[in-house]
Length: 347
Image 1 (cartoon, helix red, strand yellow):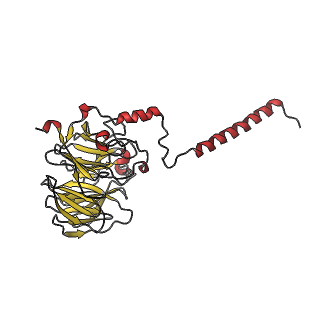
Image 2 (image 1 turned 60 degrees about the vertical axis):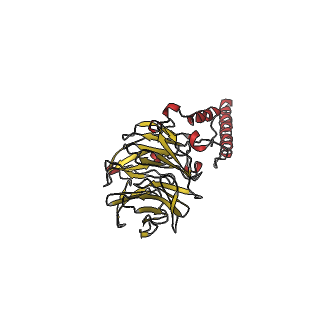
Image 3 (image 1 turned 180 degrees about the vertical axis):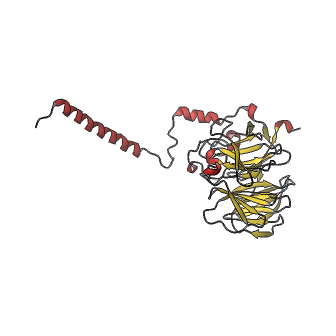
C-alpha cells in the first residue's frame, strides 16, 4: 500500500513536534528549583523593583526610634505584651521576662514548656499559650491554672482576655477558641461556614493574631487572605479590611500581616515578614503611615516576597502599643525590643 508524500510529511512533522515538546518538558523539570536556593528566578528588573520596595518615602515615616534597643536576654524570643502600668512582658525560650517601663529586668517566670504568646489582664493575671494549652499565672510567678490540652496539631499564636472571656488563636487548627475564665471551651470562631458567609482562615504558617477592639468586636488576622477580619463575640463575621499588594498600603507574600496591635486612638499597628514593614492604619483600615520600613528594621538583610511559608522561616516581628501611643517592636532575630514614638509627639 502506498502513501502520499504530503501525508508522510505531516506525520513526520507531528513526530518531530512531540519529541521537541517532550525534550523541552524534561529540561524544564530538571531546572526546577524546589528548594529555593537558586533564588526567585525572576528578572533583574524585578529584583531592582523589589529593592525599590524596601525604600519608604521619608514623608510616610511618622515614627522615630526612642533610646537604645532593649535586650530580652532570650535565645529565641516569641511574643510581647504590656500591662496597664506599662511594664513589658516577653516570652521566649522557656520563660517570661518582665521589664519595667524604663527597661530594667524585674522578674523571670520559668515555664515548663515553650510559651508562644501571652496577654496581661487588668487584674494582673497572665494568660499564656504554652505549646498546646493555656496556663494562667500571676505576675509574681505563681501558676494558677493549666487548661485542657488541645492536641499535637495545636499552635497557639495569640491570646486576649475580654470581660469574662478568653480568646485564643490556634494557627494549627485555623480557628479562634472562645473560653470562659475557668478554662471551659465555649465555642470555635472563624471556622469555614458558607451558610454564615464565613470563608475560613487561611494560615500557611505559625502566625495568627487576635485582639478585641473598643467596639467590642474581635479582630483576627487572616494572613493567607491578607486582611484583618472583625467578628462578633458570637462568631458572626461583620467585615474586614486589607488587600494583597506589594505597595506600601497593602500586604504581600504568602501570609501577611503576621501580627498587629491596637492603638489608643482605635487604630492598628501591623507587622509583616519577608518584605519587613511595620505600619499604622486607622480604625477603618485606612493606611495612615509607616513606623519603620525594611531598611530600618533589618540592617541590610535582603528583602523577599515569600510565595510559600518555607521561603520566610523564623518568627515575625511582634508589636504592642502603650497608652501614650508608643509602639514596641519585638525583633526575634536580634532578640531585642525597639520602641518608637510619633515624631510630632517628641519634645
